[in-house]
Length: 346
Image (cartoon, rainbow, N blue to C red; front, side):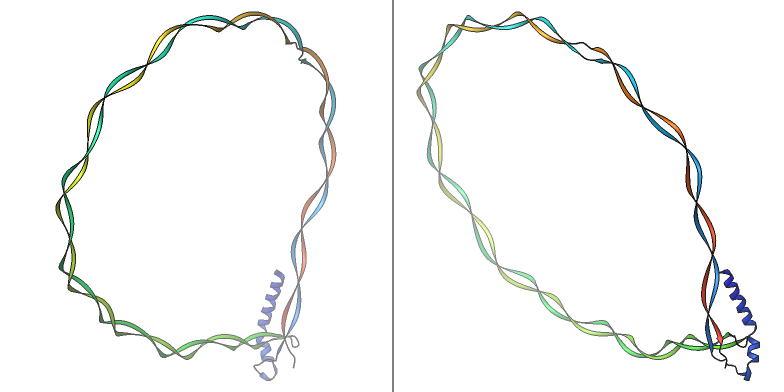
């Protein structure tokens, strides 16, 4: 890519140096050049790329290989065993026997007696009493009061009003036009460099008369109504509460008590002693010898043989093939198409 840019820069320098000679030698002395044709041209350049390749590498690796074999082991173990044994023991056995006993109890008997007591008997009678009662009364009076009466009033106010009026002005609008620009061209038939005028678009502003709306503010007067009040005196009739005292008579019940003597019968308990003979169960503990069988632990020693796995390791050499990456620089050709201007022959 760097070579392509260098070659293009050299071509531009060569073409720029021969502009004057071609324009001076053009027949007829005309300042304009014939039409130019554009020919496609393919340019090949080389671009470096990095690629990764893998190759096999052989080397020796030593590994530890496990081997398992069985070995016989002897061990001495204690085996539990039991034997039966006859034993004797003395135990206390409860025995219940009946025994006659005497005890004194109190017998309760009831007898009736006549007794007297004083009681209070209530008596109720009606008695007249006088009391003063308060009786409410209502009287009507004429009174004057001042009230606020609402009314609608008018008032002149001012407000700002904004209106739009038309006005003439000038606006700048963008326009696009083609302007001639000299461009160097190479003629492959003559072998000289000339100059051609190409139309390049340019943007410039053009003043255009326009009519716009301009805001205008004015002060205007208007009449508005609002709610007001004025005081007014009125005569109203109002109720006035009052009270008066009045003596009244009523009958109320009055309760009094009088004393009386009454005779009543009661039951009085009388206790007397009495001897009672009864049989009572009595528990006694008696000794007794009994024979029983127990299991006595008696461990014994025993030799047992069993096989256990034993692991050993053996060193083994092994050849291993590994893939090793390697980065390589490669020049890859690239082709680019460009368009070369060529002066057409008359």
